[in-house]
Length: 275
Image (cartoon, rainbow, N blue to C red; front, side, top):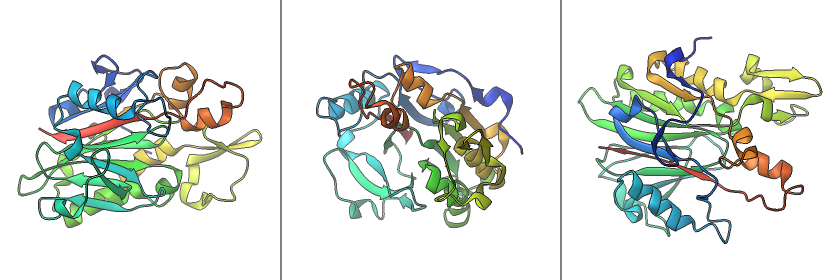
């Protein structure tokens, strides 16, 4: 299996500003970032999280445009639904309490200075930049959980851009934010997993099967034709980071909430926008 260039593998958070991580190379193409720190919970599920205030502060910190006008990716049940927003269809999506919510699993736009954001915890989430053969810039977010990975969402997203949006494959740049590692994504059986799709990305370790979502997704991007030099990857485990109170992990919360009553099922935010 090919892999991203060694210089593009990030083992610690690179900070754009305090508590805001970013991708050094991708920063040349899109305005972007992700929150990092367990003090700023972006989830509105928790009564005391101050989600909207925290999100607005994040937007202001990286100089994104109005939160109310931004696109918000709401994962569609971890499927493979891909949406492209342009000037022609933007008005079809009504505003919500925080931005313009769009139910999908991958969301792209070619509208300048229109942010796309998503609140995540463990899933392999990628920020993307591309340019068409007509020199039209595109950015987006692909949110790949275990089921979406099984449906080959990452590869389908690239194929969609190339075939439907006339994107030049060589221009695509990808940054993958911290996500859960295979050692912390374990399953006792394969009842709900299509093992034949995963191949070597599922391995038996003791009494459990380890599911390597991150590298399976990276492999899909590479199979779609993305150059290894154009993929930046954070090999930072959200589960371990949540354990060390550095961020939020849904899986860590689910497995430890009965032990630690102070745990919250939090989320961090990922956002991108064309300059």
